[in-house]
Length: 329
Image (cartoon, rainbow, N blue to C red; front, side, top):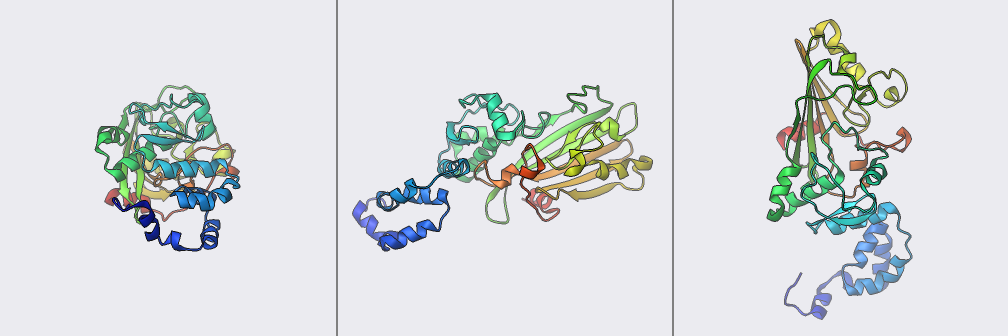
C-alpha cells in the first residue's frame, strides 16, 4: 500500500482501475465465485463496480469456506470452522494431542460428525490433527508471528504412545504384541513454493510372548485407503486398499526372505515403508496433509474418512516423493 499518498491518487495508480468498467466485469466473470467475492472486497471502487454482480451469485458451502480461508490467511487469531462455516478465535490449549472445539456453537460431537462423518478424522488412537491445526501452524510459520511461537511449537510437537492399543472397540482385546506409536509433524517448503504440513508416523510391533502374526497386529488405519482390519476378510477392506497383502510377505517364514520394502497409497499422498527384523516389524508412513487452504480442499479431504468410497476424492503423487520431501525439507 502506498502510505501517505491521498486515496484519489492511489486509485489513479491502480492499473486495474484504469480499465473500462465493462472489461473489469468481464475479468471478474472469468474468476471462481470465491475469487469474485474477494476481488469485490479489495476497495470501494471495485465494490461499486462488482457489488451488484457478486450479490447475484449463489455461493455454496464450499465457496464460503474458501472465502473465509482467504480472509483468515492474514488473521493470526482466527481459523475457519468447516462445521458452521464461520471464523473462530484461537484457543492455545487446542492441540493435536489435546484437541478441543468448544468455541464452535455446533458442539464437539456435531462438529466432528459434520467434518468427518464419524467421531474422528481417521482413528482416535492416532495423533488427532484437524485442519485448523494445519491452518494455524502453516500460517504462523509463514507470518513468523512470534506471539504464537509457543503455540506453534505445541502444534508441531512429537507424540509418542508406548502402549498403542491394537484391538480397539468393538473387539476390546488385550494386546498380544508390544506396540509403540510415534508421530512427528513437520512443515517444509514444497516444490511448488508453498509451505506444506507433513507427518511421519511409525508403529513398532515387537513379539510379546507370541510370534508376529497379522491377527496379533489387530486393527490399523494409516489413511482412508490403507487399512489393516482385524476380523474383516471381505468387504470395504478390499474395495479400496488393504495392508494385509503388503505386510503378509514379511511375516512368512519369520520374514527372513524380505527385510525392507517401500510402498505408497494410490489414492492419497502417503508413502510407506516396512522393516522386518527378528521379533520386530516397523511400519513408517509419510503423509502430505497439504498447504494452506480451505478445509474443503481436496488436499485435506483426501485424508479424511467419508461414508462411501464414491464420495471420497483421489489425489495421486509420485511414489516416494513425500518421504523424500520430509527427509530433505
